[in-house]
Length: 153
Image 1 (cartoon, helix red, strand yellow):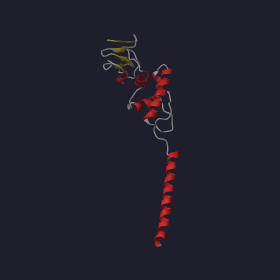
Image 2: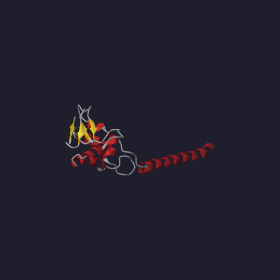
Image 3: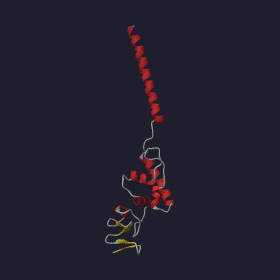
Image 4: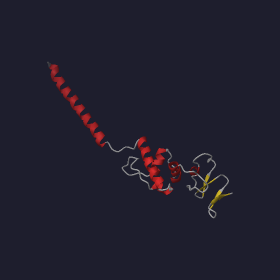
């Protein structure tokens, strides 16, 4: 009979502990804070942003201005450039590189690029030897001529 007196408080403690755990789990689900979006949400934000960029005629400067919601978990809307850098795991991606990825830009002589970001000019086949010169893409051996608005030897 002495054990019944001990088992009652142990049962009560176990029930109270379980109740506290359940309340903590509910609190975690309801107010656990904002976490960064998963890969499916990054894809959704990318698609939404690319659609908006296409509506803006793929203007590279719009990459910074198009907001797609919070993808970093800081409760602030993020822009397409941020989404691009997360999606492609490329922290130094320029607005031109992201524009090229989003709009499937065909690189040709004179396509705008960010100076010293030669990757802006390397989207598509046979573009490994292109470079960015004075803010424009040119093939190897040519440089951008502002007077003629073309790449010249």
